[in-house]
Image 1 (cartoon, rainbow, N blue to C red):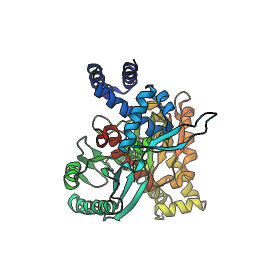
Image 2: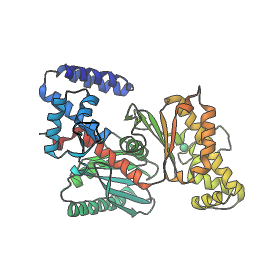
Image 3: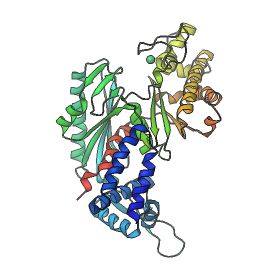
Length: 426
Ligand SMILES: [Zn+2]
């Protein structure tokens, strides 16, 4: 009974999730139990399992698909023929085979759809159209004045989205636009309301409702560090891991948490605020933008780095000139970065003790100075972890790139599309 064993496996796997998700999965489990005799429902589950396997494994033969999914070869073949007819997957090159006819491989038809990925920042907006494989079709940016109130900002944002949609519909009319993913620094409710954002200075803005009404497309909104983590899981360095942490360094210090393959954003959408974790009780510690004192971010943000250099030398620098000074061997500049590395490594050791992740991925614009903070970060990460947990963690530092952020926000919409794939259902 292939179908029953598949349902059983799914239940076991889901039970491994955290408490919140276990509650959700119980619903799923009950749903599956009550519907085991429902052929249409089983077909739908098989369709989703096969599609997800082809997406994550890349090009795969029908035989391997049956082996990986545990479904029969005939179920795989029938479902794949349906997907090929729908244009969801395509047949691609053949693999080397020792004797006999080499099998044809199957892969996702990346151009079966595209989504818009948008990142809202206080000084600029990034936007791109991206296909289902994470390939950027067109990409744009728009400079913004800092500290704009929500209404003038959103009017310009909507014009920016319209211009990308116009180009997409004109130049790529054969690729349907499936939705948009938006990332920004702040706390976002499940309904897509921006609850508060210290970056933009707004609160209680019903972003999703406004944009869905304006563009008549599904809109998915998430905290930008969370989109970074989702993007790494979907397309990037986190693809092979189930439980990992994404640390972003730059203007702020943020954390995205993936547990058992899913984003953990907390009970009130506030998880991952590592930058505002108190790391010292020194009464002289600087005050943070959040209003509290001694947060990690007052030692690790761009602003903290240039202020530390000024405090030690009396010289005002920008973050770029500070990096240039460190590159030239300026001792104070090197010490400023090393101190940030010490605080980041210590904070990460606490996170490793809490989450026991397989990997830590460091991204964000300040990875362009990783040479100067990474040695101290690694030293304090290893020294402060309990047992030898740090030795089991793979540390990856990404090259700074806006493409990763854009793919991350696009992954929000693409992920949703793959989990519902309503376009492809008959
Ligand atoms: Zn703070």
